[in-house]
Amino acid sequence: MTEHTQRKSGGGIASSRPASHSNLLTCSEKFFSEMSDPGNLTFVDEISTLETHLDDTFLFLNGITICLMQLGFACVEVGSVRKKNSVSVLMKNVLDMFICSITFWLVGYSLAFGKGNPFLGLSLWKVNSIVHQERSQWFFQLSFAAAASTIVSGAVAERCTLIAYSIYTTFISGLIYPIVVHWAWGEDGWLSVLGYKDLAGSGVVHLLGGSCALVGAIVLGSRLGRFESMAAEGQTQLKKEHSTFTPCSLACLANPIPGHSTVMVGIGGMLLAVTFLSFNGASIGRVTGGYEQDGDAAAIVAVNTILGGSGGVIVALCALKIHSYRYPKCSSPPWDLGITVNAALAGMVSLCAGADVLSQWSSFFTGLIAGIVFLTFKYVILYVKIDDPTDVASVHLGGGLWGLLARPLFTFSYYIISNQDISHAKELVYNAAGAISITLWSTGLSFLVFISLKRAKLLRVTPEHEILGLDSSYEMKETCLDEIVMQTISNDDLTTTESV
Image (cartoon, rainbow, N blue to C red; front, top):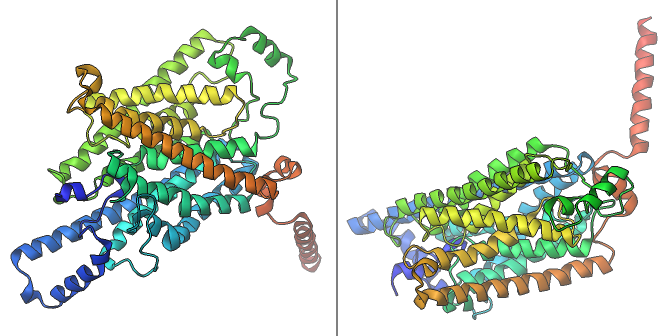
């Protein structure tokens, strides 16, 4: 087996050291013994050591950049909710990274990358069993796990309790996500052995996160007033005028609950777009050896990723313009920044699977189709009255699913569609099997988590709390505030009296 085949694609990159985890400690000891005596190092050894350090630095620095995705998600979600819930959403995004770090440190990494069976890893259970040369890979994988778990927060915003959020984040980052990683990116994972290809996680990260988000939104229920009958005569009349299955009629099925800051949505979208370049580009795993011209490979992946996002944006702008021309009386804005941002993200999500093998034109068309898939998912979810405040299920589930299929369909080396070459169609079957397996696993386990929280009455805040706003839990109690105000007034009076 060549080094290239040992080095798995995507967030599940294999180690640049020997594949067997049982040899990691031995390699570490040998490395430090050689470094302690520079005279033992040949020129080839020095070059090899330098390459190792470059690869580790490459992963570490890009892992830091990917962690900034948390900031992007936070901005998008805070801007998409009402002001009375903004601190609550930000609090949950802050906790997400740290809860994920604990669970991935104790359990997740072992399940994902430990030696075991085709279903899960069964080694590396000791928290200090990861040698120093593997810490950069661990940190890089942590950034992917955190991204997968934070996707769900947008779908359950404005009505989920902090306790429930902490619990389901623990299960996603410690159990649901790591086992799928082992399937797809582990050396002995059954999807990896089968032939499943997913560079940066269209299925492993985004399809999984989007599926969990959709289940969470369904079990949790919609926000108060989102789908209740509308008393406004104008909106009722508009529903009668557009009774067919159109975007305008679907928009009229729900009461609009606009976010309090479109600017925050735009800033968050730009942060996510930039960090996506590291998310996909760094998934080649290394910049020395393995891939041919690795330095160029990272740039190729980044270029294809941004082209995919561009395709999604083009579709969104065209759809918005056509919609505003066709339905001039519709209450939705003619240029919706939220839809534009999400369409771009859907296009970039669809390139996570095949950005390393698609041509530039294929990447652009993949993004175009991802924009259409996003809009279709968005309005179907709205039609069945599922409340997803930030459309994360449409972006990540829809974009991730299409991305897995687009890789074998548009790979430049054979073009199944244009060349009618079915000899490589087996990769399409393998990716489709992976998509089905990941969806069933993530929806099944997340349903058990959410339904258990619901039955324990821990999932949703009370109606009174939801009306008041979840930020009330993070503000000073009214009685304490009144006492401080009265004390301030008394001090002011006393100061005024003394000065007189």
